Amino acid sequence: MKATVYRSTGSWYNIKTETGESLNARIKGIFKIDDITSTNPLAVGDEVEIEIENELEHTATITGILPRRNYINRQSPAHKMHHHIVAANLDQSLLFATLKDPKTSQGFIDRFLVTCEAYHVPAVVVFNKADLYKKKENEKYAEMEEMYSTVGYRVILMSIAQQQGVQAVKDLLKDKVTLMSGHSGVGKSSFINAVFPEMRLKTQEVSGWSGKGLHTTTFAEMFDCPGGGKIIDTPGMREFGLVDISRQELSHYFPEMAQRINDCQFNNCLHINEPGCAIKKALNEGHIHVDRYVSYCTILDSIGEPSY
Ligand SMILES: Nc1nc2c(ncn2[C@@H]2O[C@H](COP(=O)(O)OP(=O)(O)OP(=O)(O)O)[C@@H](O)[C@H]2O)c(=O)[nH]1
Ligand SMILES: [Mg+2]
Ligand SMILES: [Zn+2]
Image (cartoon, rainbow, N blue to C red; front, side, top):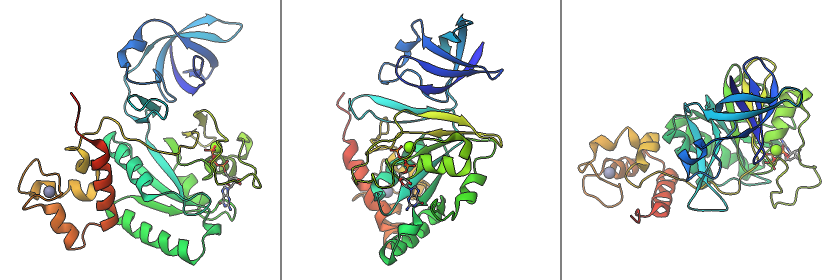
């Protein structure tokens, strides 16, 4: 029988069968070994083969995993050499960012977008808490909106508190599997509650905001949207460390660079100091935003050379 993973809490998984039955399941067998560099063998959104273990107790055994259409992974915060699969089989991802309480850095946004490009997951950037923005933040937003939309990303300004832009984001969910990511405290769970009040997810106390990013959501969990589609709420992440992306590949995942790299004189150009570099030329002519180029250089530095 086939089922989909809705929640993973370590050794137990909440799964839903094709007929809509919810079960608690655990892994049996050796397929765990296939992916030894990952800290989690199964992630939310994974499709699995199961056998019913106990009909009365609604338990099942997971005997295999179906091939993943795609996934989003990141460096495991605990084990830098390992990666953690955030979710699998996605139609799109919403990156929740805020320019105040908490502030999301552009580096974080760009690393997340690079991963989405690498694994072919379309991404939308949602700037929430617009009600808190003053002149400085509004200017910053305008700049980022211009920068990311020029590259081809959809950018939406939202305030859940003032119900601004919420419907536009909700409209994206229909019939799609959507991953929500972002720092802790940006309003991911609040968004689900705003659009699907019956879900009543736990959110951070308004007075509890300490700037430290206390995690209110502790496990990734998928929900069926009442209008069709599925949405995955995730615990906030402090950092988004890239995995499995080489220095040579990196510029392929900046769309504004990818479209120009064939014009570089050298096909192994890293777009730093090489002669005849089309990326540097586009940068100097103002076609590539300097902040995106800085992000590229920072990520490139962080990747380092493979040690084998
Ligand atoms: N001012 C303002 N506050 C908001 C808005 N949206 C959410 N919040 C508040 O931000 C806080 C954090 O919201 P959560 O929904 O718990 O954030 P989260 O992204 O789910 O956080 P984690 O589960 O820790 O990853 C709560 O106190 C919300 O009420 C908004 O549009 N404006
Ligand atoms: Mg949450
Ligand atoms: Zn180049």
